[in-house]
Image (cartoon, rainbow, N blue to C red; front, side):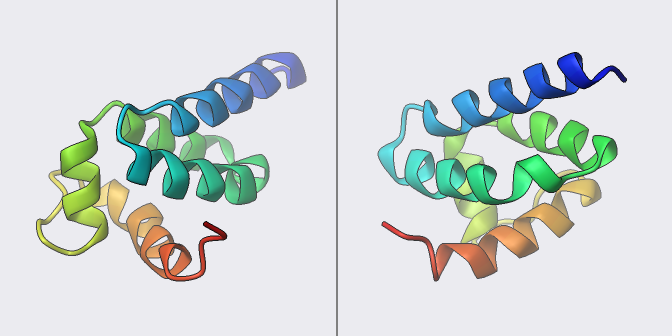
Length: 90
């Protein structure tokens, strides 16, 4: 993948993470993506894009452990997200 298209994907992910529609997920996902997306590999970025396609209510339930995500590939990101939310600079 070209550097420009990789940069575009990252910018799009950052925007999408901050503009979810639910302030709680905006703050946590926004800070998380600013911190981790720039260093993610292409496969993880693809998984993060798929995760952000999900509804906020589901992401929130998966993040707090109320529900199990439908896709196993979400779990490594959610695990990192769970640890991050406790230290999120809100």
